[in-house]
Amino acid sequence: MSANKELISIPNIVFLVTGLYFVIVAAIGEGSVYTALGGILCFISAGLAVEKDWFLSAPWRLATAAFSIIILLAQLGTDFTVSNLTAAVVVSVIINGALFLLLAGVFLWTAKDLTTREEKEEEEQEEEESKKKRLTYEI
Image (cartoon, rainbow, N blue to C red; front, side, top):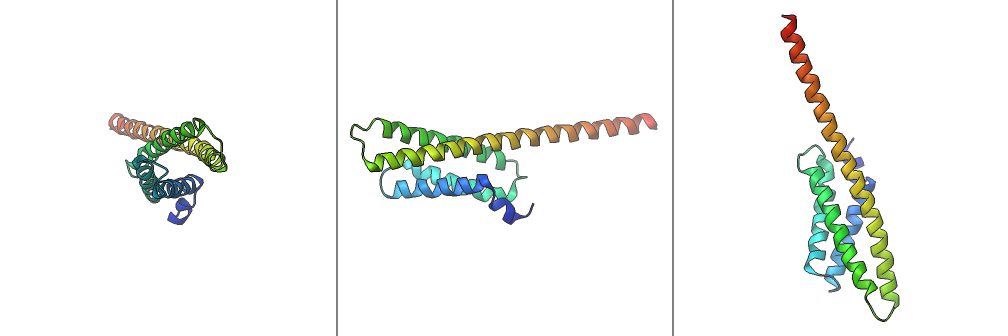
């Protein structure tokens, strides 16, 4: 796939939106330092979509999705412990819940890509080994 199609994939859009959300939340002082760190990690993960063949690419994206899910769960937990329900809290619950569901999907999607890539690599290694054995036996 071309680099442009990789940058406009569903997981990448989710990483970009989540990163933007985290940066905004951190900038207005409603999140912790970890929220800003999560935004940076999301932007790096989106950039790594260009080179999916790198060894670190898929594990980084998987770890970023997991980290972001944890941050969103912490924010949801904070939202649910508020004593007075305001419109801001309701909007926060909706946004955090939606991003949580989207990132859970990205986590599963990335995990699937990682495991299928490992299986393909194992099959290629087995195929190479069988070719080597055939050549040895044929001589």
